[in-house]
Length: 83
Image 1 (cartoon, rainbow, N blue to C red):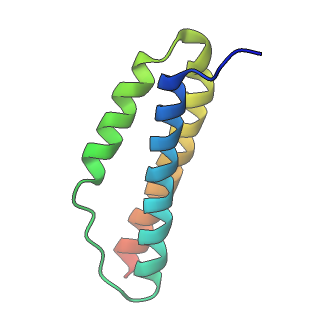
Image 2 (cartoon, helix red, strand yellow; image 1 turned 30 degrees about the vertical axis):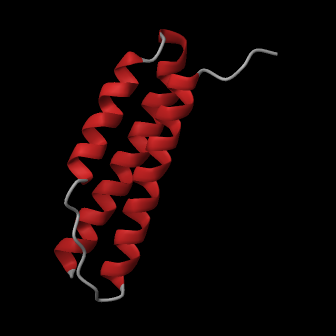
């Protein structure tokens, strides 16, 4: 069994960090709290850049993960707009 690819592991970790941030922000907004999303665009930009650097065979899984994050972000947008 080969060792995990460090670039893939770092990219997946960043994707999970973005996901947790979006879930936390959504929960806070639903609870009537204000959130500061400063830096989120930078994290997402870094994630996209890292995803582009992945080997071709790892990109489909990351593409699916990015689509999940987009859905989360869209959900947060709706929550913010209704709050």
